[in-house]
Length: 237
Image (cartoon, rainbow, N blue to C red; front, side, top):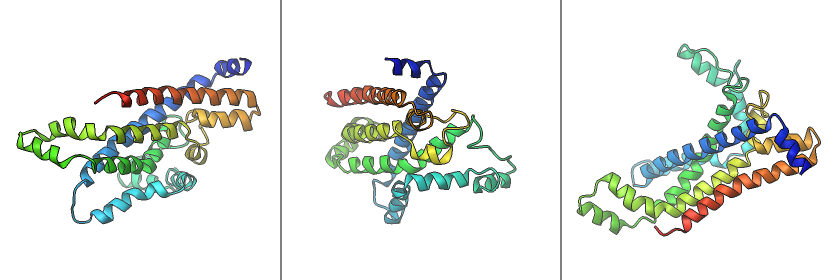
């Protein structure tokens, strides 16, 4: 109980919890929406599909540490390519990783770039299971695209959506590689999430008891939405 009391009384605990929730919700929701849109676009045959699809998968197969180091160079305010492109349109350089305002947002962009392909891949596989007979019957009945999407496509995608969201949510809660390589949780604690804060408690402050308590807090934060999602999945369509 003393370990839990120490982390709850830590002045950075609330900020870390807030950063974690913002990070998880922003990345998972954005990746789902973009992944679903790409899956719907590529769920048809067209010229160049065999070239476009592998390019979309590419970020997902790159090592997270390599991604983090690459984006650290991209975000560099002095010689980064992003600063150069901003200067071409007359905009001032942005302190992407050195500003408390933009640091967490910068990490969210990196996560979205790397893991949206995962959402796309799972949802595209789910779209392959949509019954063409149901779609054709609804077209004959005069159903609009939105009606077909809402009453046919989404119910068939229910399981794929649950799997994709669940895996990405758990992974986002445990995010560490990108944070360590891009911002190291800074400036200050503006981009520190629970997983990185646990590392700070254990290996920088050498407070192993508090780190273990923080790990349990992380477990509970993952368990609650996971159970809610699984319970929702078990309900009849």
